[in-house]
Amino acid sequence: MNRIQQIIAASIDTKAKIINDPVLLETIDKIVKTVTTAFQKGNRVYFCGNGGSAADAQHLAAEFSGRFYTDRKALPAEALHCNSSYLTAVGNDYGYDMVFARLIDGIGREGDVLIGLSTSGNSPNILKAFEVAKEKNMITIGFTGESGGKMRSISDLLVNVPSSDTPRIQESHITIGHIVCQLVEEAIFPSEKPGS
Image 1 (cartoon, rainbow, N blue to C red):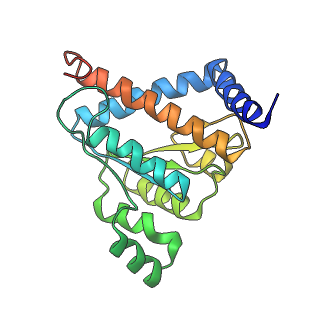
Image 2 (image 1 turned 30 degrees about the vertical axis):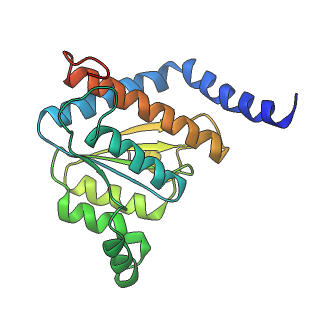
């Protein structure tokens, strides 16, 4: 087996572990229901991450605020890192650990959902954002790797992908994120047809 096949096989193996983990599948189902309910009640969903996880956060937020399969009304979701002036100002004035927490303090409301993506589960800026979200009675959802890291104890719902390999974790985060986006869209807009 050449290296390309080995890497693809490792990705498939991680996803196979997810398919065969009833607890993790139940958690994903709970996330779908939680996000659906939040949108139906007029709440917002925020995403945060660093590096590749920031790209995934932005991607998933866009699936809600733009569209996934169907041409339907926009859903209120956004990634917290997209305002570079805010990010650099707060990073400079308060420290990078505070960039998400300060924004959640300003815009987060009770019943809103904060989804944090961190392969280690130990990103200080996400942990601080989750702490502020808890103070505001927001729902916290963590997307992490196998151990869950420190996010395990502060997440209302935790997707801890059964891997310690960063690329495999991130690939699974986007797969699970897409599942959530699709099923939430289907729940809120049941009469819409894909591509309509």
